[in-house]
Amino acid sequence: NQIRPRRAFYGRDRAMREYRLADATATSIAMRTRLAGEPYLSHCDMGDSVALLSVKRLLVLGSEGEEVLVVKLKRIKDVEVRQNPKQKGLLDWGVFLSLKEPRKNGREAEVISCQEQSIALELCAQTKRAINLVQNESS
Image (tube, rainbow, N blue to C red; front, side, top):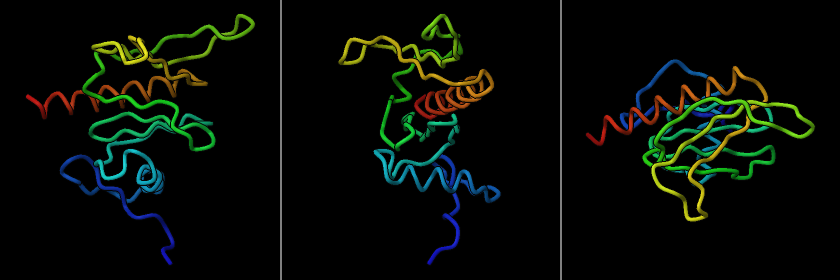
């Protein structure tokens, strides 16, 4: 039996970095989703959910491991952090994904809710890095 999850390899080049249990665990989870087989880039632990980034897609998994959102990176036009109104006048933080074209459901944007501003900023930065990587590889 394997004692710890296998090492994560990063990007299309499958670069090796220092062993990180969190990345190895995220890679193991990604292999059980529609990201299976796509090279891993990074993940963002959002408390009760997790965002996984491959070289092609952003996938958000809910607290039960269900797929909450899947977006192809090449379809994202812009990413920014915003405050979102919640129930009873409260605010939470969100990562706003502006899309190049409307989705089949008609949405022109998606919002990933985050409990804290720091998490939203981290997810935004990771998503921008992933989008830049995709754009640089296609040029």
